[in-house]
Image 1: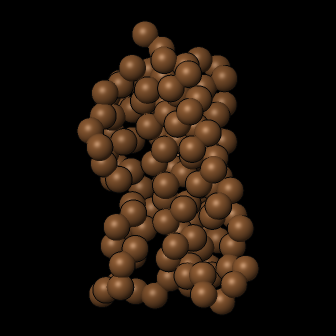
Image 2: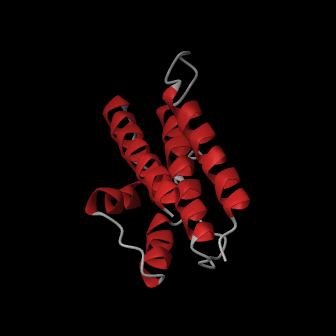
Image 3: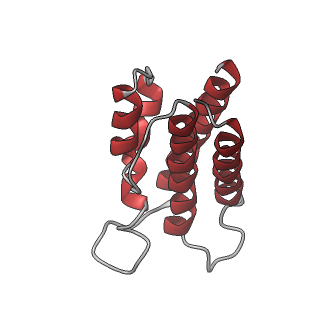
Length: 130
């Protein structure tokens, strides 16, 4: 059974994360890593909203590959353009804290933002179809 209210709430959160990521580097103190985290969160929450709509049970996870796998196991066809969002999983944990990772730059941020917008738009269309 579809839980449309819960689905919409998760999509609302995804859109909020996307809007936050879109703000960009308006202050020098803002790190591209944090903006990319917002893009990753938008994708994660959007995919979870679709899982909820289709009644697909998922574990708590920041792993976008896992969430796409859940959707596919639930017979949801995930387009290749959305599959690319798996690249954002590293922004969920690895780059959120100081550590050993490659620097995140403006090009990385723009790519993450573009991918997140694509996923959120796709999910929103899927929800309206469903």
